[in-house]
Length: 326
Image: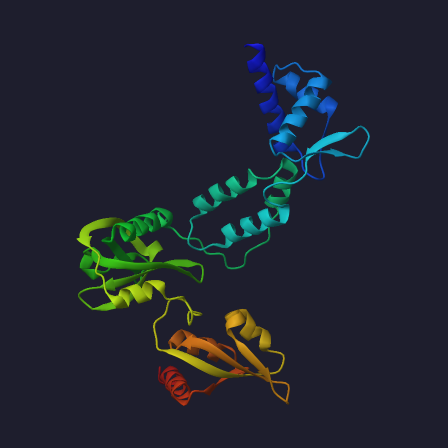
């Protein structure tokens, strides 16, 4: 190996050990660095290491001296803080649309952005109650195919299944592929959905992407219309209970005292709250009239009630009566 090659190898090894083994709370002494380089068969001296550290700083690596005895060298600022990496790990581990295998792979990639000591902290993650993982590992590739179909302005074809009473998947549409115009991909309640337009039904429907199979770009051109263009640009307001259909309604809710957090947790900044003299609150929220919304209200045991509009109140009464009749 030429002297120039050895010098480049030394610089790469130095960068690797600093990135992998150091952080704001953990460093390497000069003796540590020389020992690790020697173990890799690379001889070095202190003056050369000082020059290499300066080169790494010039290249943008935040190499700092730690004020201790003996002096330690460490990477201070990283692309992601430990708190940000923890947030990413939690988000991946709690995601329903990815399989456990994909979860482990993604967490491993996230951990590669941390030092070894930080990786140990990332392993001690919070418990996500009721965590459910998808069994379909093709969600990402299916989304890519859907976007490619939209880019080419062609329809997308796919098989679609639901689970039968025995828990086994049952193909829908008589086992034949759907051939639809993809409108947009939406993420709601931890799952990805395709909103698509059907020529035969002249309407829009949602399909869970993790329940799709054999997703492909079709030869047929996508259907184009002002309504499809409008739906493609429309935001996802009124979507707080999954991708459920139903008439868009601005509902007025009566909220019991000390229960405003329930509204904020569900609707966030889309809720308009007003305090009442008795300590309760009135909330105005955008929803879709659906059984999922009614079920949410019923599950709150009377702490949240529907005040207006009257047609929504009547529909809720009819929903409760159907439950009693059943």
